[in-house]
Length: 295
Length: 220
Ligand code: SF4
Image 1: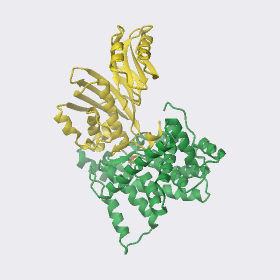
Image 2 (image 1 turned 90 degrees about the vertical axis):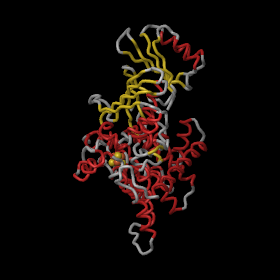
Image 3 (image 1 turned 135 degrees about the vertical axis):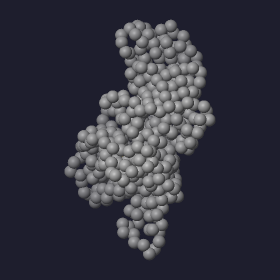
Image 4 (image 1 turned 180 degrees about the vertical axis):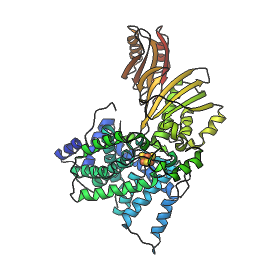
């Protein structure tokens, strides 16, 4: 890209030196950059949160997708968890996270209205992490809006040092980036320090490094929808580690740079062309044949 | 890139690069044409050509040519609307070479009032786009600002004439870039401005003897 490279580490340092919460610094800088007030920025974020929330609702209606490979799973899991006799293995928070991530993924695949954050394929991760935390921790809307700004700033850094496009960097650049954004946002939301925000983003991205983009039949359905739930849970795991003081040995900017180089080393069959990975399995080729008459 | 490029856009699924970006590319191409589309020949390159049916890229491109936004709930029915508007549309697979971005498209458009143009662009991720060619001129612009495009004689003073008209009409220039194929031939200039250049200023630029065409392009 043409613009200069941003650095998450230098933003974190600034916040620390000024003794600010990372979210407050992000809001201040972003409002100034866009020439709007902090209130206007947060109001805009709240309206985006509303679209996110309604995309969760949309997905929970259980409609089949355009290609017919996905749809109905979010509803299935919600109903399963709701029934008392069934086992909730992962606890309420993670169960909600999984359900919401799948719901938005399914809404997206059904050509519903979603917020690409950072992309449509990975649009389930942030809503799932934010709204499951809100539901289980009694978080105010305004704090969610602040967390969303943190997520956005992390995404901007990733975009400037690497990429947010599956076609250029594989799924690590979409679901991986979304998860890193969500992890940082979660840490800020729960009162973590700026350094902890950075470690959470770094740990998440490290755990998702190398993930390829291999959409079956070229549709943003399989593996995308379930990958959103995996990414959202990765984000919570990293946020939890970071809040406990666990650090990433590799600093976050370097992790992002390595994501960029892994992305460029990735073969083009694994970057959204639907020619490798899961998309090249016999079952996937059958689906492609069935849907479009060509593999 | 700003915050709302990352947390956003609000769009109809399923793919920000293959659906939302495609709407924006086509909308920019429509803006370059400057009148309703009567005929569109749409060439798809790379990942666009391989996976366009699965992502609804074809629907999205048509939606953009109809002037719709990426969050328009009519997008799944775009073919129907194009039919109703009697727009003739053809898709084909093209090769723009190794160096071209994997999500690239080349439009050849004919307008309802006879204007023609070619526009090449790429969807570069997160719904953002980059136009790389108009009417054979290699250039680079994103459509984030209202712009003025001129195709003019590559002669001393022409650029100054254009900018002095703009300043006379109180148009603030954010950025400008000039592109030419060869010295002394035809050149293209993109002037990104703070607000869309009005009709009068446009006419004044259009009347310059050394300016062959001038197009006003709305920000998308
Ligand atoms: S597999 Fe590809 S299309 Fe699907 S979410 Fe990941 S990057 Fe996006």
